[in-house]
Length: 78
Image 1 (cartoon, rainbow, N blue to C red):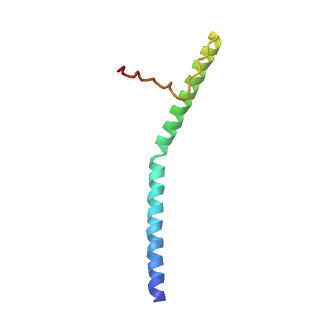
Image 2: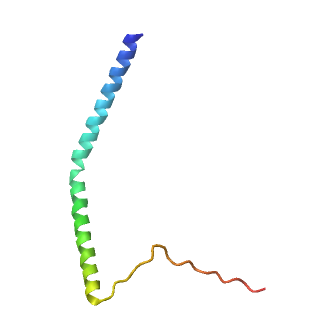
């Protein structure tokens, strides 16, 4: 019985090692995508700051509400 349990554990460990290797391969293959996202994020941040600085220089900075205003419904008159 003990031998069966040990063999089962070894198979589980080997399967887990295969999954880890597959995950590593995916990470290595997708590293270029991560770098591309970081670059795009940096550009976006710079553009946002530039737009904010331009708005501040004009003396007007719009403040957006977190939630859009609720629309009132007109009730039908009876």
